Length: 242
Ligand code: UTP
Image (tube, rainbow, N blue to C red; front, side):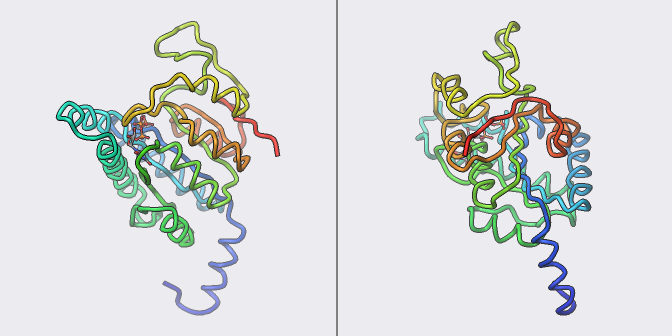
């Protein structure tokens, strides 16, 4: 990989100065064709040139939910359904790697240790889910925690955290800033089973809280995700106290 000692040391220097951001991409992105996927790949390549390394986690989306629901009807246990969801999220990761080409680390990590090791390449790392019993949001929070990421941007299919589910209640209002405790109260009523870990699950909020990870929830589009990484105030900021 390195031609000589000096290229090895300049790689190390770059790794030290690089800013790492973890970006969760909603699984819905992967059912839309390749245009936005290509735009995201361009964004992550551009960020890399500015020494901002994206560690991307891809959601399972509609395809995962469909497989989970069919297998549940066939009587499969919840843990296996989670594992199926993870497999689909990993296929979505493969799609993004295809779009990123040489800017991506070419292998989808299977655990946190692999994620950290692949991040040392200085390339964009793309992960799917890692552990049954949680969502790709929890995976993203764990990766952000492990890497000491400067920011976790959670790209979802709505514009942020709302007072109520905006897809069901048109009167729902977006919340600009929220504490992990208040967020927990909003989502506590949610059902927790394979394919249904909405927005942010309890695990992800607990991880954000315990490690004070700067987190923003935004619409999953290349413009809003870019804005969030560059410090624009859009969507919902999760405000933690040290
Ligand atoms: P997601 O977390 O992506 O759920 O994983 P989602 O609701 O589809 O999220 P979006 O809409 O893409 O953003 C799909 C399913 O895979 C399993 C869970 O069953 C989850 O609901 N999964 C995923 C895990 O069990 N562990 C993981 O680390 C990730």
